[in-house]
Structure formats: C-alpha cells, structure tokens
Image (cartoon, rainbow, N blue to C red; front, side):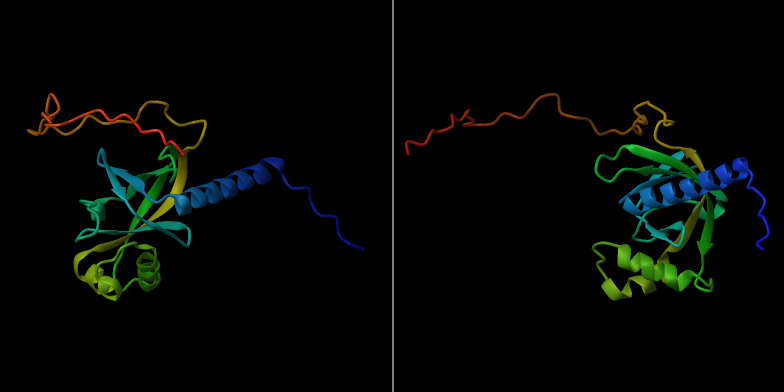
Length: 187
C-alpha cells in the first residue's frame, strides 16, 4: 500500500512557480535582446552581451565597451529591451562578478562571448586581446524589478550632456535643386 503524501502548501507552490516564471522570463528576454543597458552610479551604459548559464556576460574595457569602475560595483540594474522595437521590457537587479583568467568559468564564458560577438576584427586572437586589455564580467539576475504592465510610462530620456556642438539653423543652399515630377510610363 502506498503511503499518502502530504498535500503541498498552495502558497509555497505558487511562490516557487512565480520564481521559476521570473527566471524563465528574464532568460528569454536577455537571450533575444541584442543590447542591454547596465545602470549603476546614476549612469546608463549600453552593452552587447551573451546569455550564458543563467547570467548576462559582457566584455568591458579596452577596445570593446566602456564600463568604468565596474570592478567596484556589487550590484547593478539591467534594463532589458525588445530587439525589434527597443521598448523597455524588464528591469532586473543583478549581482556583479568579475571573472579573472584563473576563475573556473572563465574559459567557457570567453568561448560564449567569442561566438556571440559580431564583427571581431581580430578573430581568433580576440580572447588573448581580452585577457590583456579587458575585463570579463558576469551579471547574475537576483530580482525582477519591473516587467510588462509595471514599467514606468515616461519617455525614459535623459538630458544630453552639455556640448559646444550646435545644429545649423537652416539647410545649406543647393544650386540646381529642382523638384522632380515622376514620369508616367506610356506602355
């Protein structure tokens, strides 16, 4: 005779389901996003990335992408956007881990980054260049901050950094500029 199993607590089952759903949602959005924004120290940094074993992995510094003072950060916010429309899809709090060459996961992450990096100018030598000049960083999502239906509806635009550059007031003069009338075929 089989022993009767205790009934699972519905609240615990619901919480576990919610956690699994959030992990799967973040993974799916991060895999499809071509670019994400890393937010820390009141600055937004756009980065290309790869999703590898439950984390967002990036190459920072050198000739790749700047992430100043990322080594000093314990936690960042990742702004995940849709690839096609660039609309905000989710915001995730993530822990920061710098992967040095002696880290157990370093080689696997570098291999995934090399495969995911488009237009490498140095091809097979990129991992050696990254080891000399760059930092490999892994962002592991810890908390889903905002998801569809709970995102800020503002334009999410920052004021541009002050610059001496200006836009011309009018278009430059063009000699012989004529409006063309489309020809209709007589066929």
